[in-house]
Image (tube, rainbow, N blue to C red; front, side, top):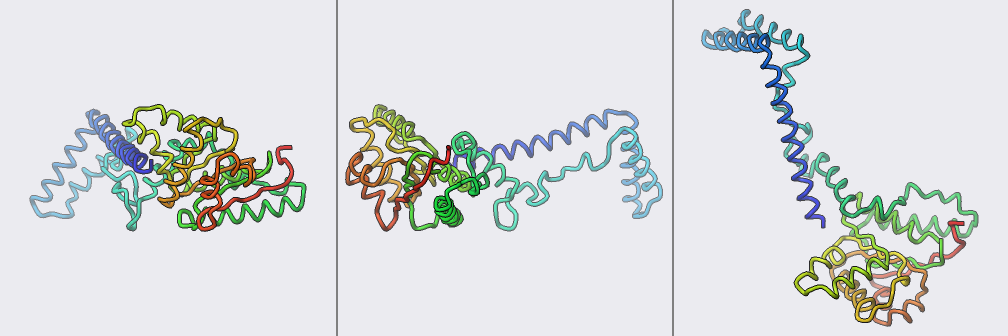
Length: 305
């Protein structure tokens, strides 16, 4: 996904540069179509050439011709700077790199395009900045939520090097599981990493499509779910249990992502025991593996109320 978005970004940036150059050329063409400007420009060029030929670096004639040319441009609302072929980005000179790193003119556009590709504004609207813990009335729940948010902010800051790769936020309705996953997803995309944010139902539907598609098409359908830097499966346990699909493809996804060291966040109303009963030992063991997974219980009142 990232490579696809970066290629799109570089192509878009090149179009921006070309558009600016074309605009400068068009402005110059417009200016020199005015007879008075064209004559003043020719007189200035001729005076400069004569001064160079005679070796007179401080030709008064050339200076006067240049001043008349500038005033003529100004008369019609132009300046010499309008026609200069200057780079659109002063930091990198339109090379795309500054100080050995990708320039902000490319990076900012890349993150903007990555957000669109990940549909982050539609799927993960809640951010860390939106969190107002003062609204949580229960003191114990407020302290626990605050500690968890602080911990997950540190996780995002370390991403993608954090040791724990699979996080499961488990808890009752309205305890803030999806909001926390959303905030993490947004922050991670803003760092330039790819995210796929799916409800459990959407994930199951995608896997059903994979299962029923020709073998030659399956890799393309699975690619983002298996290779994005962060996969979020929201509300696990609400999807239908489809034979040869629900459990099997969830297991495949977890195995592939864990083997590649990629992060996965799952939110669910199910307890660990419920996950074991619904999905079996193989999935439960991957979600609770002490080395690279963690099931985090989010307890308390329904914050929506």
